[in-house]
Structure formats: C-alpha cells, structure tokens
Length: 533
Image (cartoon, rainbow, N blue to C red; front, side, top):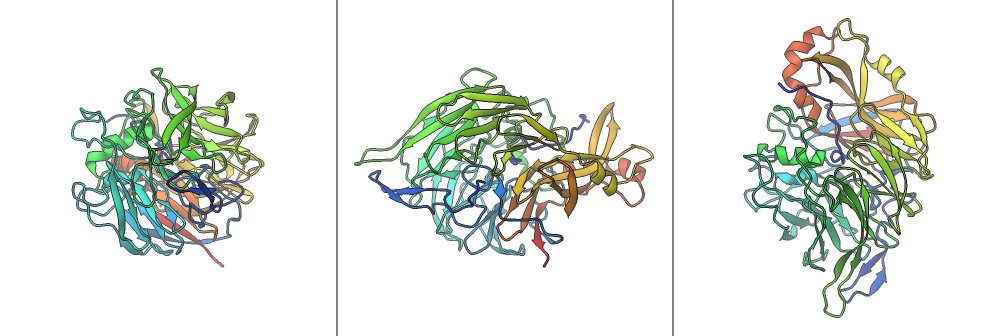
C-alpha cells in the first residue's frame, strides 16, 4: 500500500478549488450582437449570488452580504456520488450540480432548496446525455436561467426546466490517450465563463480556447490553442487505489480527474476569470517552457460584418511549475492573483501582466479568495489557511488549536488531534469560512497519515486568523468549494477523496481511537446548511 497523504484539492476546489463587492448583478457588463456592436446589459449572469464555480466571474469567492447564523439545519442529497465542484443557483431558487457517475447514470441534477431532485438529465450512454466528466465542471447560469456545462467531449445548454437547448462537440483529447490504461480520453472545461459580450467561453484541459454563441452554441471565433506544453504526470502524491471506490465516480475517469486536480498531464486545470469592465479573460496554464506555468491575458474580439471573431494573447506571464490555480481578480480590477504548483502566490498587473510580487504561501496551487479590502486568503497544505495583504505581506496563519482541542480529545495512541484544511475559503461579512477535517496523525509504514474523524465548516476571524467556532459538521470529507447564497444558505460538496482513500485503514484504526470515535465513513453527496431563525 502506498503511503497516503491528506488530499487537498489543488484547484477547486480544483477541485477542489470562489466575488467582488457587488454580487452576481454586474458580472457581465454588455451583450454583443452578431455584428459586434455592444448594447448595455448588466445581466449576462443570473442575479442569484452564486452562478459559477468560484461564485462570480472574477473568481473572488465572496458573499459579503451574509453573516454566519448561530445555527443551521443540515440536509444531504445525492449520496453515493463524489461531488467536486460547487452548486450554482438558478433564478427560481433551485440548484444545479454535477456528479461523475458511470454510464447509465445522470450527471447533471437540479435540486430544490431542501435537496429534493427537481429534474436531472437522462442517463448517459456514449454521446447521449451528460457524461461522468461533468464532475469537473460547475454549471454556469445566465440571466434567463439557462444552464451551460461541459462533460468529457461536449458542451451542453439546458433551460432551467430541463429542456435541451443545444449541444456541441469539444475538441478531442490528444491521441493516443495520455491517461492511464483503461481510462477515458477526456478534454472538458474546468467550468466555462461568460464573456463581456455574453458569449460562452471555455478552456479545455488540453488548452483549446473556445467562444460560442450563448443562444445557438455556434463558434464565434476559431478555436485557439494555448502555446504551453502538456505537464508531466503528477506522481508526488500517489492516488490511493481505493480513492472514489464504491461507485462514487466512474472508474474510467478516476485517473484523468486525479491528474486534472493535481495539474498533471494537462495544460490548464483551472477556471478562467473574466473582467466584467475590460472584457479581458485570464487563464492559468502551462508555459511554452517545459515545467513552467503562465498566466495568460486573453482578449476576445467579437464577430463583425460577417467576419468571425478572434482570440489573442495580450500577455503571457511566466510562473513556477504547473498549470497554476484559477486566477482571481482583485476588487479594483487592477491585479490578478494565482498560485503555482510549488505554493508561490503571485500578483500580476491585470493590464500588462507584469509580476508585482510573489510570496511563498504553501498554497499548493489552491485558488485564493479576496475580500472587499483586497486581502487574500489561501488554503495551505499542510495547515489550514494563510492571509496576505494586497501588497503581499503575510498577515497571519490560521490558529485553530482551541477548536481542534475542543472538538476531539487527545488520543492515548496517537496523541493530540490535528486539523487540516479540506476545501477552499469563502469570504462572508466579518468571517472567513473554510472546510476542515479534524483527526489524528497515524503512522503508516513510517509516514504520518492524517485521518479524518470529523468534518466541519469553520468560522475564522479575518483580522487575527483565530478559529472562532465550528458552524456546522459535514457528513463526509469535502475537498471542494464552499458556496454561500445571499439568503445565507451554505453548500458543502462532499468530494470523498480523503474518506475513500483511508477507508481500508478503518478496521485497524477505529479500535484504537478514543471511545465513541471512528474514521469518517464515505457517503458522498452534497450537504446543504439552512440558517435557523
């Protein structure tokens, strides 16, 4: 058995990698006609407060109008499935969410506010129905409530009521299949975005950039290939043979999804950020130089007078290794933040691409969140969370020692309990919310393995980094994005990466834990937390 490490999503959150001082209104600032003229329109995205993986088009992961409630009522839906990307909210209050179940299952689901399935796409077979690779893509929602989501090889659009509007093919993955034997050759978007003029924009994991008409799915510009090379296979963190076992994920996509999460074998494993004022799109991907990453600033020219539009590179700013994290635009739009695979946090000028500063954050390519003042919050591994000023100065490392000791007792066998960040942070009014697990470091073949006993959403003081309270306990390990809606509801995706990876150890470890405690048993799904009056 390979030594296990705690699984921290590199980008969502990838997975496992989130908003400006405005919410969803103003995410898109204009809608373009086919001749390229611009008509004022501030409603490309739905005005619901969480309409893409990281909340808004700038990937800021904010919900500044919400203060955490004193208590919550929890529901769980879609158990038995790993969920890696955030649910998004439709104008009618329903939620759209994706899973990665094997052929014969549905993978796009619409739930009501209590987690009951309203509708889902047909069970997929071949190119019919949304396939399992949709697990890597949050649906995005436009002002009319239309849903846009990619899977392994297609981009789909549905109405809020479940009618198929259109479906188009995505570019093919490289041949021969770069993933492990028995895997599918997949090439999805890691969540699409809307451009300033209202088109659908996406970058496949192999670096093909597409812009399509929101109404028809027709290309608005030729497909553009980013110039970077394909990253090397990720081998530093081994994938447990038991990860996503028990039908939690289609076995044929386990290797591709793991590699995308860890930034291996692909060119871009991230969600683009779009500046709703300038229209520039920012994509983190690999650089032309082998083993380097880059932040690309892309400019989109719409079609005009019957001629197709175009996609061009405004700048390519080199970073350290890997394809980086999802870019995040500062509240004033002047700076773009991203991380490389060695944990360096970068700030780039949004216009020129000039590197303004970098800081060794230990963020391991996790996407950061920013608050209204421009402070930056990065998931760290190992650890929980670190904060930086807009100028790059370290403000604090989160201190959850009191919460950890209050949540779990000292073990006679394993010693003091530990806490590990298990999802990307989200900024709300007066708090930073982050998912963690509490557990113990267990020696396995000479390596300390952090095993999960309780999974929680923690409220952290943004001024000091002190953990203030556990505001709710999740039913499984999370590894994703913590979505918060304007009415105060919280949604925790249950990625089950950690719980399934360590599940074979349970018969050995459970008898040695303090009385009444055991490892979290994998269940999967989505936890919804409704504020109590």
